[in-house]
Length: 156
Figure 1: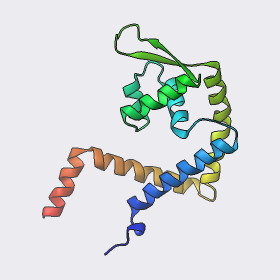
Figure 2: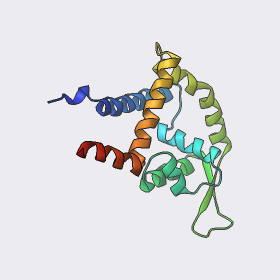
Figure 3: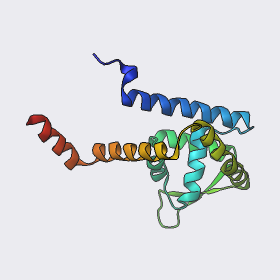
């Protein structure tokens, strides 16, 4: 029987968890009072200014309830403002406040150094190969034809 900690997906999950903890520690060490998920949400609001809260949830891989809590904290701590959507009664538009913009600007400078530390001693070639592998896994898991093809191979 294969040991769990020797499997690809176990190590993938562990890597994501370790990196998230590292990133959060770097935020705290550099004087930021936001979480990684709050930072991701701020980034999405800037990159997709017309996105609904549900669309933001999809983009940051969080459930709707989690993003609702994140948005409430960002509103409460004056990182974002909220206005009614002009065309949709049930939707809101979010915009970064000055505090949110300043935070994002500072983090845009720091985050590449976090990534550089995490990827130290990793060649550009290995990064590209890994990105291709991850995209292939995503495709295989999302594409019904790929699943059917694999199932046919398993049967024959």
